[in-house]
Length: 253
Image (cartoon, rainbow, N blue to C red):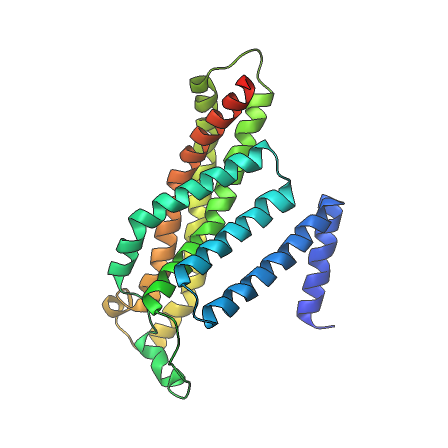
């Protein structure tokens, strides 16, 4: 058995031991997300709108991760609504900003390797770079919104007596502050690990540091991490507000 096969078996065993019957939903959800990604590539290759296909992909990925894997309940509803609303706001604000970075296309260092390939693609790379950034950010947003929605829902159900919006929100913000620090550090470590090979490659090519930090590849990686950091820093309290409002509104029905 290959190394990948051994790792896959270990992954399935660990998921089964820890999650029990729920592992079936997690594993099938991963497979569904893989199929969804292949469909994304297919429709992009067919010339469909990059923004539309990417938004549908993020929407489908969110529904699979939140609704299918975790069940369609009050906490997953709050997390999904928060992420969906925030993505719309994020798109309106950040799409012009990302396009102004002009990091689309291939770095100059890769053009020699790509010279033998056909670069006539039916896709606008300026739109594709925005889509890649948003798909990368969506994972952190789903994770953060689900964590806050779950914690806030648990606080609401464990309350003693009646609770007002501000009381629930203040308790939820305590959780937000605890999660935000670890999440930002996780994003920083992800940036370091993903950029380490790139930095060594640039050093082997004797590219100066000032040129490296302005290169497309480096700026693209940095933009993903910064956008993820901004997104997580905003969506956590945003999810807290939406979840508190949703839970108290459900109570009045």
